[in-house]
Length: 369
Image (spheres, rainbow, N blue to C red):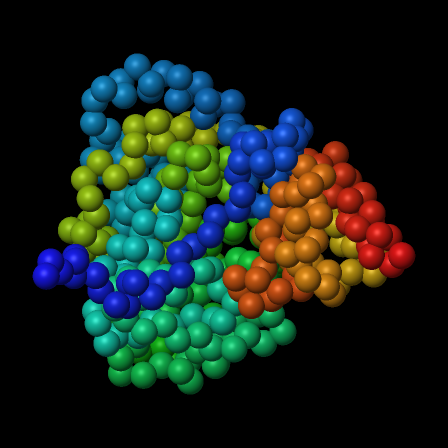
């Protein structure tokens, strides 16, 4: 009898990550021409004009392999951050660097720690490596760092801390991080995922970059060009860590893992400071708009330091999601995060935000009848 492939049971048991519904898919399914997507925390302004022009120039060389170490982007970003180029590693999105951490530090029987309502890629990646994912309860929808400390065991190899956190938009403070790092064993890798750091305006938000550059060897900082820079479709992110850790991760990283268009666009985007300012201004103003309007609708929400807001609809969030879909509006239901009554809303342009509030008001009125 022919046997099948030797599938690993712990991979077979994985529930794959479900991305937000693409615009074109909704257009096909419902025949809706005008669709607003406020589901995946993308930049509603699109990419920087400088990034677009850089991609047009770079496209003439797509028959060639890209720079294997992102040479020009590497040195431009190092100048931007004021760090040694040897402390930077690039990935096909910051997700790839999360994968590199798993492959580099997790084996079967090991453990990774995070919070119960954190980015879904953390448990998936942990399980891919045959390791065990353990999640500490959140406290007031925030990472409870003392609870994570208490959960550390001799098998713990990595701790993932998303700050600001996706999907809650909440954050841990500088003082909390200082106390936490003072107690974390030096042989445990602490990954601070700052995908949404460009939208932060909290004065007590921790500064992880100086901690890494000061020589902390077990800390890695992740950032991305997908959100504030508007380059989500190009998939490019980076990690900042000690030279020793970066050298180690580069041994795992595939050659040419970041395509040439992404490298060119990211390098140019770093020069467009006005675009970045405009993006943050849009998000900060959008958050305040949603706070006012959601409060008037009597809906609970979580104040956010990111470019999205979590909203408690006090009913089946999937039902709200489907209602909005039929109106050409895409948001993100939170059932996968075990928050079935909540939806996550990306902050869009003013007109898009206004339209969403109108639709939520229509839904609530319909529900009240």
